[in-house]
Image (tube, rainbow, N blue to C red; front, side):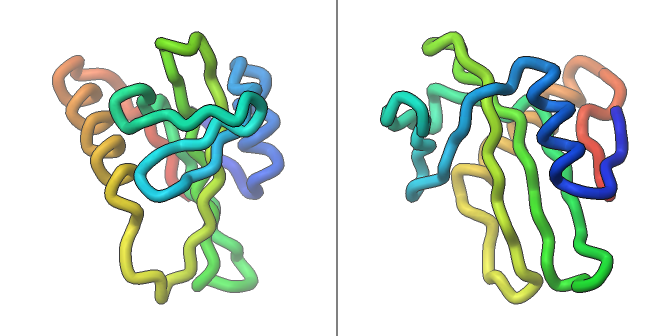
Length: 116
């Protein structure tokens, strides 16, 4: 998997892979922006994610998630900005990241996750 220096390159690459919809995190649900539909935690999975750290501000971080919602037959992108002083990652994202890690471990696949 590629390493990205900035978020623009990561998003462009995800678009090329078919991740063309936009999601926003609202509580523990995702809002599918184009259709104004809320997706519950059981309706989507994280296929990949990329952490981009701002070299000028080590306390500022962007995490870009490649999301799939099979029931709706869509793939999309969720952007999440973090500051180092942010207390926690949203619980739904922690759950989905654990599912991704379990899948990778069970299938003995090469690393799906790319860190900067």
